[in-house]
Amino acid sequence: MAKKNIRHVCGISGGKDSAALAIYLKQQGKYPDMEYYFSDTGCELPETYLFLDKLEAYLGKKIVRLGSESTFEHHLFMSGNMLPSPRQRWCTVKMKLEPFEKFAGTKEDVKSFIAIRGDEHREGYVSSKPNIKPEFPFVHDGIVRKDVFRILEETIGVPKYYKWRSRSGCYFCFFQRREEWLGLYDHHPDLFKKAMELEKVDANENGYTWIEGMTLKELLEKKDSIIEYAENRRKNNDNRTWQEKLLEQGDDMNDKGCLICSL
Ligand code: SF4
Image (tube, rainbow, N blue to C red; front, side):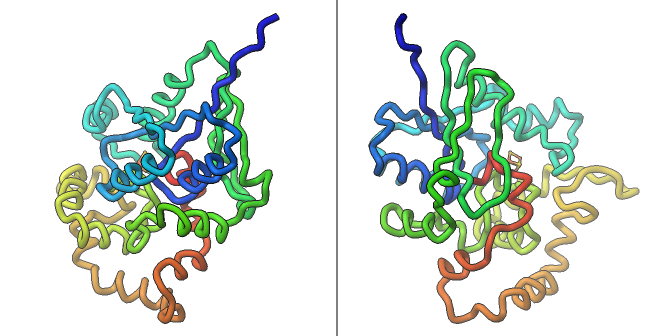
C-alpha cells in the first residue's frame, strides 16, 4: 500500500514565538517540506509585514499569506457593526481559523506545528478537523522564553513593535493594554484614527468600543494617568534594555485569549 502523504505546516503569527519555532525547525532540518503560512487580516502593523519579510529571507521559503475572502470591514458590517471583543471573537474565527482550515483542506493529513513553549501552561488552537494534528516541539524539547529570545537575537532579531507593544496581531486588537493603545497613537496615528472611526457610540453611550467602558477619545484624555500607571509598574526595571525588560516581564495573561494571533 502506498504511504500516505503528510503535510507539515507552521503558522507564523508575526510574533516572537512562532518566528523562533520556524527558525528552530529549519535549523534542525527535519522538515524540508515545511509549509509556512501567515493568516493576514489585512489589519496588521507595518512592522509585522517587515518582520515577515526578514523571516522569509532567513527561511529561504515563501510564507504563504492566507486571507479571508472579505475585508475586516465587510465582516464588521455582517456582524451588525459589533466590534470584536474577548467575548465575541468573530475576528479570529473569520479571519484566522477559517482561512487556515481551508488551507489545510480535508484530503491530506496535516501536522500543524504550534509554538507553545515549555514554560507555558496554555493550550494552542487545536483544530477539530480530524486530518489536522497539532505538534508542540518547544514543549517536547523544553524550549523556554529565554531560548526564544536567544534564537531570535542570533538570527533575525526581535520584532521592533515589542518596544511599545507586548503582542502581535491586528493594530486594533482589543487584547492590547491601554498604554499600548497610546503606543499605537504615537507610532501609527493614522491607524489609531482608523480604530477610533470604527467605534460606534450614541448620545446615550450605547454602542461598541475597543476598550470596555471607554472610547479611544476618552483614552487620549486620560493619557497622563495611563502613562503614570504604566511607568509605576515598570519603575524598577529602568537600567535594562527593552529586550531584557521584555524577557523578564513574563507573558501577559491576556495572551492566553489570543493564541492563534500572537504566538
Ligand atoms: S489579533 Fe486580536 S483583533 Fe486581530 S484577529 Fe486576533 S484577537 Fe482578533
